[in-house]
Image (cartoon, rainbow over all chains, first blue to last red; front, side, top):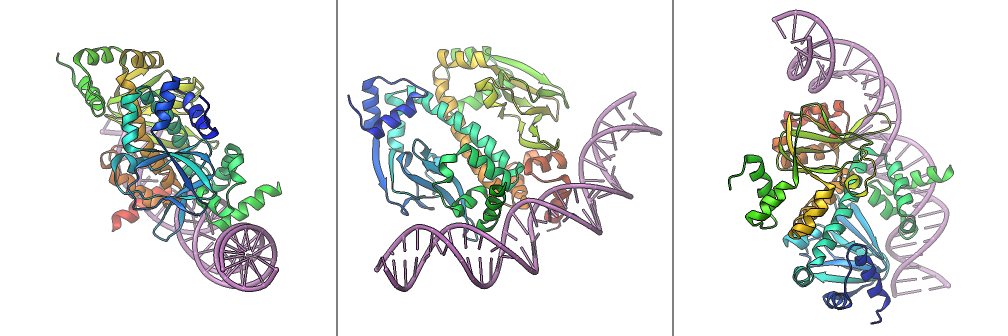
Length: 197
Length: 197
DNA sequence: TAAAAGTCTTAAACTAGTTCATTTTTTTTC
DNA sequence: GAAAAAAAATGAACTAGTTTAAGACTTTTA
Protein backbone atom coordinates (compact mmCIF):
# COMPACT_ATOMS: atom_id res chain seq x y z
CA UNK A 1 0.00 0.00 0.00
CA UNK A 2 1.41 3.42 -0.79
CA UNK A 3 0.39 6.21 1.52
CA UNK A 4 0.51 9.94 0.99
CA UNK A 5 2.90 12.08 3.02
CA UNK A 6 0.37 13.12 5.67
CA UNK A 7 -0.63 9.49 6.26
CA UNK A 8 3.00 8.49 6.66
CA UNK A 9 3.50 11.32 9.18
CA UNK A 10 0.65 10.23 11.44
CA UNK A 11 1.44 6.52 11.15
CA UNK A 12 5.04 7.25 12.12
CA UNK A 13 3.82 9.25 15.07
CA UNK A 14 1.81 6.24 16.23
CA UNK A 15 4.58 3.74 15.59
CA UNK A 16 6.64 5.46 18.31
CA UNK A 17 4.53 3.55 20.82
CA UNK A 18 2.66 0.67 19.11
CA UNK A 19 2.98 -1.52 16.00
CA UNK A 20 0.02 -1.76 13.64
CA UNK A 21 -0.64 -4.33 10.92
CA UNK A 22 -1.38 -2.93 7.47
CA UNK A 23 -5.05 -3.75 8.01
CA UNK A 24 -5.09 -1.86 11.30
CA UNK A 25 -3.35 1.10 9.68
CA UNK A 26 -6.06 1.29 7.06
CA UNK A 27 -8.81 0.88 9.62
CA UNK A 28 -7.25 3.67 11.67
CA UNK A 29 -6.87 6.05 8.73
CA UNK A 30 -10.53 5.43 7.82
CA UNK A 31 -11.57 6.86 11.19
CA UNK A 32 -9.85 10.20 10.55
CA UNK A 33 -11.27 13.34 8.94
CA UNK A 34 -9.05 15.56 6.77
CA UNK A 35 -9.29 19.25 7.62
CA UNK A 36 -7.82 22.41 6.07
CA UNK A 37 -7.62 25.70 7.95
CA UNK A 38 -6.65 28.92 6.22
CA UNK A 39 -4.33 31.34 7.98
CA UNK A 40 -6.19 33.61 10.43
CA UNK A 41 -9.25 31.37 10.56
CA UNK A 42 -10.42 29.44 13.58
CA UNK A 43 -10.44 25.71 14.22
CA UNK A 44 -12.20 26.27 17.54
CA UNK A 45 -13.69 29.21 19.43
CA UNK A 46 -14.51 29.76 23.12
CA UNK A 47 -18.00 28.46 23.80
CA UNK A 48 -17.79 25.62 21.27
CA UNK A 49 -18.26 22.08 22.45
CA UNK A 50 -15.43 20.43 20.63
CA UNK A 51 -15.97 17.00 19.10
CA UNK A 52 -12.51 16.48 17.68
CA UNK A 53 -8.93 16.01 18.66
CA UNK A 54 -6.41 17.08 16.01
CA UNK A 55 -3.08 16.03 14.55
CA UNK A 56 -1.24 18.65 12.49
CA UNK A 57 0.43 17.53 9.26
CA UNK A 58 1.25 20.98 7.92
CA UNK A 59 1.20 24.56 9.19
CA UNK A 60 1.02 26.21 12.59
CA UNK A 61 -1.82 27.05 14.98
CA UNK A 62 -1.99 28.89 18.30
CA UNK A 63 -4.15 27.69 21.18
CA UNK A 64 -5.17 30.49 23.53
CA UNK A 65 -7.70 31.92 25.97
CA UNK A 66 -8.71 35.55 26.44
CA UNK A 67 -8.66 36.90 29.99
CA UNK A 68 -11.20 39.32 31.47
CA UNK A 69 -9.29 42.26 30.00
CA UNK A 70 -9.28 40.64 26.57
CA UNK A 71 -5.56 39.85 26.73
CA UNK A 72 -4.58 36.57 25.02
CA UNK A 73 -2.77 33.80 26.93
CA UNK A 74 -1.28 31.29 24.56
CA UNK A 75 -1.05 27.77 25.92
CA UNK A 76 0.63 26.11 22.96
CA UNK A 77 1.79 26.43 19.38
CA UNK A 78 0.87 23.34 17.39
CA UNK A 79 3.00 22.55 14.34
CA UNK A 80 3.58 19.47 12.14
CA UNK A 81 3.61 16.19 14.07
CA UNK A 82 1.82 17.67 17.11
CA UNK A 83 -1.51 16.72 18.65
CA UNK A 84 -3.84 19.47 19.79
CA UNK A 85 -7.41 20.28 20.78
CA UNK A 86 -9.18 20.83 24.09
CA UNK A 87 -9.19 17.51 25.83
CA UNK A 88 -11.36 18.73 28.70
CA UNK A 89 -14.18 19.80 26.39
CA UNK A 90 -13.65 16.73 24.20
CA UNK A 91 -14.12 14.44 27.20
CA UNK A 92 -16.83 16.25 29.19
CA UNK A 93 -18.78 17.90 26.34
CA UNK A 94 -18.58 21.20 28.21
CA UNK A 95 -17.92 24.45 26.30
CA UNK A 96 -14.26 25.13 25.67
CA UNK A 97 -12.55 28.31 26.93
CA UNK A 98 -10.02 28.07 24.07
CA UNK A 99 -9.57 29.62 20.68
CA UNK A 100 -7.46 27.75 18.14
CA UNK A 101 -6.40 29.94 15.25
CA UNK A 102 -4.15 29.07 12.32
CA UNK A 103 -1.11 31.34 12.02
CA UNK A 104 -0.25 29.65 8.68
CA UNK A 105 -2.40 27.74 6.18
CA UNK A 106 -2.64 24.36 7.88
CA UNK A 107 -3.60 20.74 7.22
CA UNK A 108 -4.88 18.47 9.98
CA UNK A 109 -6.42 15.13 10.75
CA UNK A 110 -9.31 15.17 13.18
CA UNK A 111 -10.62 12.23 15.13
CA UNK A 112 -14.21 12.59 16.34
CA UNK A 113 -15.34 11.64 19.83
CA UNK A 114 -17.38 8.77 18.37
CA UNK A 115 -14.45 7.42 16.37
CA UNK A 116 -12.08 7.87 19.31
CA UNK A 117 -14.30 5.55 21.38
CA UNK A 118 -14.74 3.18 18.45
CA UNK A 119 -10.97 3.03 18.01
CA UNK A 120 -10.50 1.47 21.45
CA UNK A 121 -13.07 -1.20 20.65
CA UNK A 122 -11.73 -2.01 17.21
CA UNK A 123 -8.00 -1.78 17.97
CA UNK A 124 -7.49 -2.07 21.76
CA UNK A 125 -3.75 -1.45 21.30
CA UNK A 126 -4.71 2.23 21.01
CA UNK A 127 -5.36 2.31 24.77
CA UNK A 128 -1.63 1.73 25.06
CA UNK A 129 -0.82 4.35 22.44
CA UNK A 130 -2.84 7.02 24.24
CA UNK A 131 -1.61 5.88 27.65
CA UNK A 132 1.95 6.50 26.48
CA UNK A 133 1.13 9.69 24.57
CA UNK A 134 -0.60 11.20 27.61
CA UNK A 135 2.15 10.02 29.92
CA UNK A 136 4.73 11.82 27.80
CA UNK A 137 2.65 15.01 27.59
CA UNK A 138 2.04 14.86 31.31
CA UNK A 139 5.78 14.82 32.02
CA UNK A 140 6.12 17.95 29.87
CA UNK A 141 3.21 19.81 31.43
CA UNK A 142 4.29 19.02 34.99
CA UNK A 143 7.66 20.56 34.17
CA UNK A 144 6.04 23.52 32.46
CA UNK A 145 3.58 24.19 35.27
CA UNK A 146 6.55 24.43 37.65
CA UNK A 147 8.57 26.65 35.35
CA UNK A 148 5.66 29.07 35.06
CA UNK A 149 5.95 29.90 38.74
CA UNK A 150 9.64 29.34 39.44
CA UNK A 151 11.46 30.92 36.48
CA UNK A 152 11.75 34.55 35.42
CA UNK A 153 10.35 35.62 32.05
CA UNK A 154 13.87 35.78 30.62
CA UNK A 155 14.59 32.21 31.74
CA UNK A 156 11.31 30.98 30.26
CA UNK A 157 12.15 32.67 26.95
CA UNK A 158 15.59 31.05 26.79
CA UNK A 159 14.08 27.63 27.64
CA UNK A 160 11.47 27.99 24.90
CA UNK A 161 14.05 29.10 22.33
CA UNK A 162 16.30 26.17 23.17
CA UNK A 163 13.51 23.60 23.21
CA UNK A 164 11.64 24.81 20.12
CA UNK A 165 14.17 26.61 17.90
CA UNK A 166 12.07 25.82 14.83
CA UNK A 167 8.92 27.39 16.28
CA UNK A 168 10.50 30.69 17.45
CA UNK A 169 11.12 31.80 13.86
CA UNK A 170 7.59 31.01 12.71
CA UNK A 171 5.65 33.12 15.22
CA UNK A 172 5.38 36.82 15.99
CA UNK A 173 7.08 38.31 19.00
CA UNK A 174 3.67 39.34 20.25
CA UNK A 175 2.41 35.76 20.22
CA UNK A 176 5.61 34.63 21.90
CA UNK A 177 4.91 37.19 24.65
CA UNK A 178 1.41 35.69 25.02
CA UNK A 179 2.98 32.27 25.50
CA UNK A 180 5.74 33.37 27.89
CA UNK A 181 3.12 35.26 29.90
CA UNK A 182 4.38 38.83 29.59
CA UNK A 183 3.53 41.99 27.64
CA UNK A 184 4.85 42.43 24.08
CA UNK A 185 6.78 45.47 25.34
CA UNK A 186 8.66 43.51 27.95
CA UNK A 187 9.22 40.67 25.44
CA UNK A 188 10.89 43.20 23.15
CA UNK A 189 13.20 44.32 25.97
CA UNK A 190 14.16 40.75 26.87
CA UNK A 191 14.96 39.84 23.27
CA UNK A 192 17.08 42.96 22.81
CA UNK A 193 18.91 42.20 26.04
CA UNK A 194 19.49 38.48 25.31
CA UNK A 195 20.67 39.14 21.73
CA UNK A 196 23.09 41.83 22.88
CA UNK A 197 25.14 39.16 24.68
CA UNK B 1 -13.01 -11.64 50.34
CA UNK B 2 -12.75 -8.92 52.93
CA UNK B 3 -10.20 -6.23 52.28
CA UNK B 4 -8.61 -3.79 54.68
CA UNK B 5 -9.38 -0.06 54.42
CA UNK B 6 -6.30 0.83 52.37
CA UNK B 7 -7.08 -1.91 49.85
CA UNK B 8 -10.64 -0.68 49.50
CA UNK B 9 -9.36 2.86 48.92
CA UNK B 10 -7.07 1.90 46.05
CA UNK B 11 -9.57 -0.52 44.48
CA UNK B 12 -12.21 2.23 44.55
CA UNK B 13 -9.76 4.59 42.92
CA UNK B 14 -9.28 2.10 40.11
CA UNK B 15 -12.96 1.30 39.73
CA UNK B 16 -13.54 4.93 38.63
CA UNK B 17 -12.24 3.85 35.23
CA UNK B 18 -12.24 0.04 34.91
CA UNK B 19 -14.02 -2.98 36.43
CA UNK B 20 -11.91 -5.78 37.88
CA UNK B 21 -12.97 -9.33 38.74
CA UNK B 22 -12.15 -10.47 42.27
CA UNK B 23 -9.29 -12.52 40.87
CA UNK B 24 -7.89 -9.50 39.07
CA UNK B 25 -8.22 -7.41 42.23
CA UNK B 26 -6.15 -9.92 44.14
CA UNK B 27 -3.60 -10.21 41.38
CA UNK B 28 -3.31 -6.41 41.32
CA UNK B 29 -2.93 -6.07 45.09
CA UNK B 30 -0.21 -8.72 45.02
CA UNK B 31 1.87 -6.45 42.76
CA UNK B 32 1.90 -3.61 45.29
CA UNK B 33 4.38 -2.88 48.08
CA UNK B 34 3.20 -1.36 51.36
CA UNK B 35 5.29 1.58 52.53
CA UNK B 36 5.29 3.74 55.70
CA UNK B 37 6.97 7.14 55.84
CA UNK B 38 7.43 9.01 59.09
CA UNK B 39 6.80 12.73 59.20
CA UNK B 40 9.86 14.73 58.04
CA UNK B 41 11.45 11.75 56.34
CA UNK B 42 11.99 11.35 52.62
CA UNK B 43 10.33 9.02 50.15
CA UNK B 44 12.60 10.31 47.39
CA UNK B 45 15.56 12.68 47.10
CA UNK B 46 17.07 14.56 44.17
CA UNK B 47 19.58 12.34 42.42
CA UNK B 48 17.68 9.11 43.12
CA UNK B 49 16.58 6.96 40.21
CA UNK B 50 13.07 6.20 41.29
CA UNK B 51 11.69 2.70 40.74
CA UNK B 52 8.23 3.27 42.16
CA UNK B 53 5.03 5.15 41.59
CA UNK B 54 2.98 5.75 44.73
CA UNK B 55 -0.62 5.84 45.90
CA UNK B 56 -1.26 7.50 49.26
CA UNK B 57 -3.71 5.84 51.64
CA UNK B 58 -2.98 8.01 54.68
CA UNK B 59 -1.05 11.18 55.45
CA UNK B 60 0.38 14.01 53.41
CA UNK B 61 3.59 14.49 51.41
CA UNK B 62 5.10 17.42 49.55
CA UNK B 63 6.83 17.03 46.19
CA UNK B 64 9.40 19.75 45.51
CA UNK B 65 12.61 20.82 43.83
CA UNK B 66 15.27 23.17 45.17
CA UNK B 67 16.40 25.99 42.88
CA UNK B 68 19.96 27.26 42.51
CA UNK B 69 19.48 29.51 45.56
CA UNK B 70 18.20 26.58 47.61
CA UNK B 71 14.61 27.87 47.61
CA UNK B 72 11.95 25.13 47.49
CA UNK B 73 9.37 25.00 44.69
CA UNK B 74 6.52 22.69 45.61
CA UNK B 75 4.85 21.00 42.66
CA UNK B 76 2.17 19.09 44.55
CA UNK B 77 0.82 18.04 47.90
CA UNK B 78 -0.16 14.37 47.85
CA UNK B 79 -2.82 13.24 50.33
CA UNK B 80 -5.12 10.21 50.67
CA UNK B 81 -6.41 8.89 47.35
CA UNK B 82 -3.72 10.67 45.30
CA UNK B 83 -1.06 9.20 43.03
CA UNK B 84 2.45 10.63 43.18
CA UNK B 85 6.07 10.00 42.23
CA UNK B 86 8.34 11.26 39.48
CA UNK B 87 7.00 9.79 36.29
CA UNK B 88 9.90 11.11 34.18
CA UNK B 89 12.53 9.33 36.29
CA UNK B 90 10.28 6.27 36.63
CA UNK B 91 10.04 5.98 32.84
CA UNK B 92 13.53 7.01 31.71
CA UNK B 93 15.59 5.77 34.70
CA UNK B 94 17.27 9.17 34.86
CA UNK B 95 17.96 10.80 38.24
CA UNK B 96 15.01 12.71 39.65
CA UNK B 97 15.23 16.43 40.47
CA UNK B 98 12.52 15.99 43.13
CA UNK B 99 12.36 15.55 46.86
CA UNK B 100 9.27 13.92 48.31
CA UNK B 101 8.98 14.49 52.04
CA UNK B 102 6.19 13.45 54.39
CA UNK B 103 4.58 16.35 56.25
CA UNK B 104 2.55 13.85 58.33
CA UNK B 105 3.14 10.16 59.14
CA UNK B 106 2.00 8.52 55.92
CA UNK B 107 1.01 5.15 54.45
CA UNK B 108 1.44 4.35 50.76
CA UNK B 109 1.30 1.64 48.18
CA UNK B 110 4.18 1.55 45.72
CA UNK B 111 4.21 -0.16 42.37
CA UNK B 112 7.65 -1.00 41.03
CA UNK B 113 8.68 -0.41 37.44
CA UNK B 114 8.88 -4.18 36.88
CA UNK B 115 5.38 -4.77 38.28
CA UNK B 116 3.98 -1.80 36.37
CA UNK B 117 5.10 -3.42 33.11
CA UNK B 118 3.92 -6.82 34.29
CA UNK B 119 0.53 -5.37 35.11
CA UNK B 120 -0.13 -4.47 31.47
CA UNK B 121 0.73 -8.01 30.39
CA UNK B 122 -1.34 -9.72 33.06
CA UNK B 123 -4.35 -7.39 33.08
CA UNK B 124 -4.38 -5.39 29.80
CA UNK B 125 -7.37 -3.39 31.04
CA UNK B 126 -4.84 -1.39 33.06
CA UNK B 127 -3.69 0.30 29.84
CA UNK B 128 -7.15 1.82 29.83
CA UNK B 129 -6.99 2.71 33.50
CA UNK B 130 -3.71 4.56 33.09
CA UNK B 131 -4.83 6.11 29.81
CA UNK B 132 -7.78 7.65 31.63
CA UNK B 133 -5.83 8.54 34.78
CA UNK B 134 -3.16 10.35 32.75
CA UNK B 135 -5.78 12.02 30.59
CA UNK B 136 -7.45 13.44 33.67
CA UNK B 137 -4.15 14.60 35.21
CA UNK B 138 -3.16 16.12 31.91
CA UNK B 139 -6.31 18.25 31.83
CA UNK B 140 -5.43 19.53 35.31
CA UNK B 141 -1.79 20.27 34.55
CA UNK B 142 -2.59 22.05 31.29
CA UNK B 143 -4.89 24.34 33.27
CA UNK B 144 -2.33 24.80 36.00
CA UNK B 145 0.52 25.56 33.62
CA UNK B 146 -1.61 28.35 32.14
CA UNK B 147 -2.63 29.71 35.53
CA UNK B 148 1.00 29.92 36.62
CA UNK B 149 1.67 32.56 33.99
CA UNK B 150 -1.72 34.26 33.64
CA UNK B 151 -2.98 34.72 37.21
CA UNK B 152 -1.66 36.88 40.05
CA UNK B 153 -0.42 35.22 43.23
CA UNK B 154 -3.61 36.26 45.03
CA UNK B 155 -5.77 34.66 42.34
CA UNK B 156 -3.73 31.45 42.47
CA UNK B 157 -4.12 31.34 46.24
CA UNK B 158 -7.90 31.74 46.03
CA UNK B 159 -8.08 29.04 43.32
CA UNK B 160 -6.06 26.63 45.44
CA UNK B 161 -8.13 27.31 48.55
CA UNK B 162 -11.36 26.74 46.64
CA UNK B 163 -10.17 23.61 44.87
CA UNK B 164 -8.42 21.97 47.83
CA UNK B 165 -10.07 23.32 51.02
CA UNK B 166 -9.07 20.15 52.89
CA UNK B 167 -5.39 20.52 52.03
CA UNK B 168 -5.01 24.22 52.98
CA UNK B 169 -5.53 23.45 56.68
CA UNK B 170 -3.00 20.63 56.74
CA UNK B 171 0.03 22.48 55.42
CA UNK B 172 2.15 25.37 56.66
CA UNK B 173 1.83 28.81 55.14
CA UNK B 174 5.46 28.54 54.13
CA UNK B 175 4.83 25.39 52.09
CA UNK B 176 1.76 26.98 50.55
CA UNK B 177 3.98 29.89 49.45
CA UNK B 178 6.36 27.36 47.87
CA UNK B 179 3.43 25.92 45.92
CA UNK B 180 1.92 29.25 44.88
CA UNK B 181 5.37 30.39 43.78
CA UNK B 182 5.95 33.38 46.08
CA UNK B 183 7.90 34.20 49.24
CA UNK B 184 6.46 33.29 52.67
CA UNK B 185 6.41 37.03 53.48
CA UNK B 186 4.21 37.88 50.53
CA UNK B 187 2.03 34.82 51.24
CA UNK B 188 1.46 36.19 54.73
CA UNK B 189 0.41 39.55 53.30
CA UNK B 190 -2.01 37.97 50.83
CA UNK B 191 -3.67 35.82 53.48
CA UNK B 192 -4.08 38.80 55.81
CA UNK B 193 -5.56 40.81 52.96
CA UNK B 194 -7.95 38.09 51.73
CA UNK B 195 -9.17 37.25 55.25
CA UNK B 196 -9.81 40.90 56.06
CA UNK B 197 -12.61 40.91 53.43
C1' DT C 1 1.56 49.99 -5.20
C1' DA C 2 -0.51 53.05 -1.83
C1' DA C 3 -3.04 53.11 2.24
C1' DA C 4 -4.24 50.79 6.25
C1' DA C 5 -3.38 47.77 9.83
C1' DG C 6 -0.54 45.45 12.63
C1' DT C 7 4.10 44.75 14.88
C1' DC C 8 8.22 46.35 17.19
C1' DT C 9 10.98 49.65 19.91
C1' DT C 10 11.86 52.96 23.43
C1' DA C 11 11.03 55.45 27.56
C1' DA C 12 8.81 57.22 31.87
C1' DA C 13 5.75 56.34 35.62
C1' DC C 14 3.70 52.65 38.03
C1' DT C 15 2.50 47.99 40.71
C1' DA C 16 3.16 43.14 42.13
C1' DG C 17 6.20 40.68 44.32
C1' DT C 18 11.21 40.25 46.64
C1' DT C 19 14.70 40.96 50.04
C1' DC C 20 16.35 41.83 54.36
C1' DA C 21 15.84 42.71 59.12
C1' DT C 22 13.25 42.44 63.46
C1' DT C 23 9.64 40.87 66.64
C1' DT C 24 5.88 37.81 67.98
C1' DT C 25 3.67 33.41 67.96
C1' DT C 26 3.49 28.48 67.47
C1' DT C 27 5.47 23.98 67.34
C1' DT C 28 8.90 20.68 68.46
C1' DT C 29 12.00 18.40 71.38
C1' DC C 30 14.18 16.69 75.43
C1' DG D 1 6.98 22.08 80.77
C1' DA D 2 11.23 24.86 79.56
C1' DA D 3 14.32 25.73 75.96
C1' DA D 4 15.11 25.65 71.24
C1' DA D 5 13.61 25.79 66.68
C1' DA D 6 10.57 26.92 63.25
C1' DA D 7 6.73 29.64 61.42
C1' DA D 8 4.23 33.89 60.95
C1' DA D 9 3.70 39.01 60.86
C1' DT D 10 5.26 43.59 59.77
C1' DG D 11 7.72 47.20 57.50
C1' DA D 12 11.17 49.62 54.50
C1' DA D 13 13.96 49.54 50.47
C1' DC D 14 14.36 47.23 46.18
C1' DT D 15 13.52 44.75 41.29
C1' DA D 16 10.84 42.37 37.65
C1' DG D 17 7.33 43.19 34.93
C1' DT D 18 3.10 46.47 33.50
C1' DT D 19 0.98 50.45 31.60
C1' DT D 20 0.58 54.16 28.65
C1' DA D 21 2.03 56.72 24.90
C1' DA D 22 4.37 57.78 20.70
C1' DG D 23 7.14 56.95 16.60
C1' DA D 24 9.42 53.62 13.22
C1' DC D 25 9.09 49.55 10.63
C1' DT D 26 6.71 45.62 8.25
C1' DT D 27 2.95 43.16 6.43
C1' DT D 28 -1.54 42.91 4.48
C1' DT D 29 -5.13 44.28 1.58
C1' DA D 30 -7.66 46.56 -1.97
